[in-house]
Structure formats: C-alpha cells, structure tokens
Image 1 (cartoon, rainbow, N blue to C red):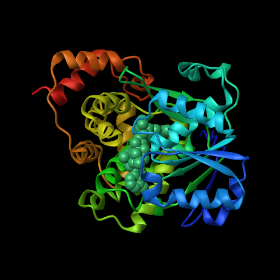
Image 2 (cartoon, rainbow, N blue to C red):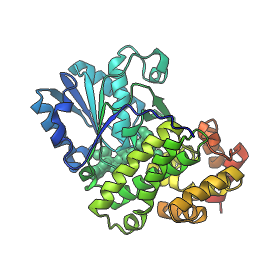
Image 3 (spheres, rainbow, N blue to C red):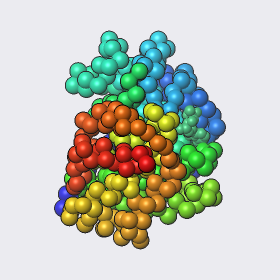
Image 4 (tube, rainbow, N blue to C red):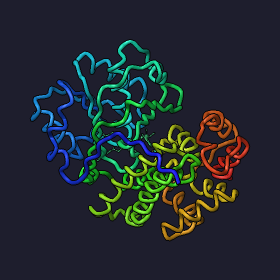
Length: 368
Ligand code: NAP
Ligand code: ZN
C-alpha cells in the first residue's frame, strides 16, 4: 500500500461557486486575468471573476493574448505587462493553455530579472505570486497540478515549467463554464483527460491514491464518450467530465504521463491537431505495447475491467474517436522521434518503448 499524496490547492466546486465565494479573490491589490481570445467571455467566467474582484476592490487587467499551446514568449510578455501594472496575483481562465500560461506568468512576475528560458531553472527562482484557476474545458486538469506546458518559440517543441509554487491557491470547478464548448473540443479535451487517467494508472510512480483518482476519472469519461461522439452532451455529463478531468490532473501530478503525450505533441505542431485528439491517436499502440509485459497486461486488464470493458476495446475506440489520419514520410518520422526521444514518458510505464519502437509506432500509424 502507498497512499503518498500532495495537493495544496483548495478546490471549490459546484454551479455558481465563484459568485458564492467572492471573498476568496482577495489575494492582493491588483490582479492579471490571463485568458485566450474568447473562452473567458463565451463561458461567462470572465464576468463572474470581474464581479468578484470588483466586490473586493481589486484592480485588474485582462491579458487575453494566450493561444492554444501557449508560447513561452507570450507568457514572458504577460509577466512584463503585469509588473508594469503592479499585479500581485493572477487568475487563469480557460482551457489548459491559459491556465498553464497563468502559472508561467505568475513565475515571471515574481522573477523580474530572468530571461524567458530561465523560467525552467526552478531552484534559482523566487516563489511565484498566488494563482487562481478557473477551467472552461474538461481536459487538462491543470487546475489540479503545477504543470505549465509551454511551447518553445521557433522550436516546435514543448517544455514543462514545473515549479512547486505553480499550484493554484484556489481552483473553481463550475461545469457551467464548459456549456459553450463545441462538440469537437469537448470530445478532444475528454480524450486528453482519459489519456491522463490511463497513462497515470500504468505508471510505476502510481500510488494507491493516484490510481483511485485515475480510475474515478476514467470511469466517468468512459461513460460519456458515446454522448460526446454524437454531440449529445447533457449538463450531468458536463459536470461529471469536469470532475473527471480534475481527477486526471491530480493523478498525473503524482505520476506524470506516458508516451502518447510526447508522441502526440508532434501531431499538434505539424498537423495542428488539438492536444487531446493527438494523444488519443497513440492509445491503440500504447495498449498494444503495454500488453507485451506481464505487469502491463495485469494493470491494463484491471483498469479496463473497472470500466466494464477490455484493453483491446479501449485501444481500438480511442484512436477512432480521435478521427485523425495522415501520411508522413520516413524523414518526418525520424524528425518526430529525434524531437521526443529524450522524454521521460517513454519509461513511465511497465513496458519501456525503445527508439526503434518509437519509429515503428509512427510508421505503423502513418506510412501505408
Ligand atoms: P485550450 O488550448 O486551452 O483551448 C482550446 C480551444 O477551446 C481554444 O480555442 C479556446 O478558446 C476554446 N475554449 C476553451 N474553453 C471554451 C469554452 N468554455 N467555450 C468556448 N471555447 C472555449 O485547450 P485545452 O485542451 O484545455 O488545453 C491544451 C493545452 O493544455 C496544451 O497546451 C497542453 O499541452 C496543455 N496541457 C496541460 C496539462 C497540465 O497538466 N497542465 C495537461 C495536458 C495538457 P480561447 O482561445 O478563447 O481560449
Ligand atoms: Zn494531456
């Protein structure tokens, strides 16, 4: 038994949880709201947050420059603007992109003298300013972990800023903010959350408690996939997905993710494929390789059984939901593998995939 667990964020959930807890926004004198181009407005979360800030007499500035797969430079610029405005805390509103960006901006505010890429030198950093997170997608679970996944400018590559000071002080989980999310993004983000759950469950770093979160998340998402696929998404499903996504985010806080994540990053950069679908493309291969080891087979069978299914069905169903086909050449396969070969994700499972197997996986999927 191993019940090791760390989750310092205070989580407040339920419909209208922001309006009912406005006093919690009193974290400083001036706030930067970090968001994308429209999700905060469309979801209604921006109005609720501004209302809470105003009620506490807190000044604010809205930084809405964050795009999907946020750039390190955009976060650095956000930090400069926030300091000029005197911001002493941040609220991230949106999917994983704005939430991850908010964590980086909170780091840049507290470390005015660093260059952008010095943000990854965690031991040299002063503690970030406080962070509040408000998810408007049910996918990344960023509100339940300190990960901030940043795209390196001009490199088509991601790097994780993972500071102990990047946990949200408060995370507000209100599924009503996901009602405006399209069928496609709802499905893609659910695929991401499911990938977190299965990849976490398989990790040797799992604890009994991280597996509890992973299974809770996976079961809830599994039951929603058919409705998501048909675009019939009820409010009950929205609520279940929001909590499942959070659970997946907490699970990977203990374990990290497996190889579908780095292998998927390449599809995101080169085919503009949303993150969740990009990871799900590789779940068939993930299952196939994990079934090669005794431990992998045992874990996967237990995981699937808890969901009332089999590893083979999971491995067939997720790539189908990802709806992605492409043809790439040998040169691109090599370039993809060179970019991700050093990711620790490849050894974060019972069956450790080798470099030759990475090549084979891309070739099997994309060279006919
Ligand atoms: P996202 O990139 O944050 O957003 C995807 C799209 O959905 C954007 O166009 C966004 O619009 C829109 N959107 C978001 N909420 C909406 C709403 N309620 N109504 C209408 N539109 C909405 O998507 P995501 O999948 O949640 O995040 C992906 C990012 O998170 C990637 O960079 C990935 O690497 C990272 N990630 C982080 C973790 C972690 O643990 N921290 C885990 C997995 C992935 P706007 O542009 O207007 O916002
Ligand atoms: Zn993910």
